[in-house]
Image (cartoon, rainbow, N blue to C red; front, side, top):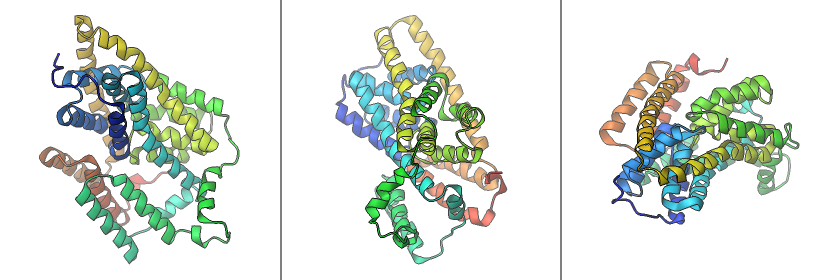
Length: 371
């Protein structure tokens, strides 16, 4: 194996900083996230070898749970040991958890889907919106990083300027009102124990990417338990897909809807904990016997299956995301840009999002709307 070009250890602090950044800026689902790790950690930083990356993908694809998180835990274990795996893995999850929990709090506070439907009808109507758009464009092009923070900052400005927080009849301070947002759900509708059990099961028994877990969650949350309505579940999935990090962060949004902030914490713990335990059980065994011919044979076969499964997930995602001539053009143009100029994922997604924002009110595509 090629191990000459990788360090024996990487400081846990370095792992945490890297995965915090990836969790904040990593868009595009499991395929894009794993590809970004391969590009940055194998080719650029040379923290891991190609063989170690291939082993991680093969093993993690063979285990239940979200692929991108498991690969992150695997790589953190390879270079940071047991505690490095825990630190790197949770650092990967943390930014996504904060973003989605905040979105869930705003969703509940501002009245759910009725507020969302009103927002979709807004266009670029005044100078403030154009200033925010221009600022986001300049910052993104100049820095080529921290795109998620740009969205959050512009959203806060928009909330302060257009929202009703500062126009409310209450004289309570803004800080007190914001602190009260997570308390809008005053009492859990579902016990935390039941919520934890459900998401532990989801994280332990479903194989493949976050997109594969979605049908399992829909059956359990909507059809069997009735904790969510169909449209609420679709909003939760959408939040998981448009936010950075793994798609299964949908669990955080669901947990908040059914049991408040405590539910968000419990659901997040439940969906990701099995990944940590499974990887940390398998990784030491594989590292110890990695030179064994049978182990190498398994890795090669599993890696081939992982590639096929990942490509299959791309097809499934394409069926969901591509529904008219414009989305076909955006997909083809994105592929061309990625292969020709190697543009970073956040910058490419931002450009495609701007196209969608401009085209949506003009085309009003029927296939997008939830029936």
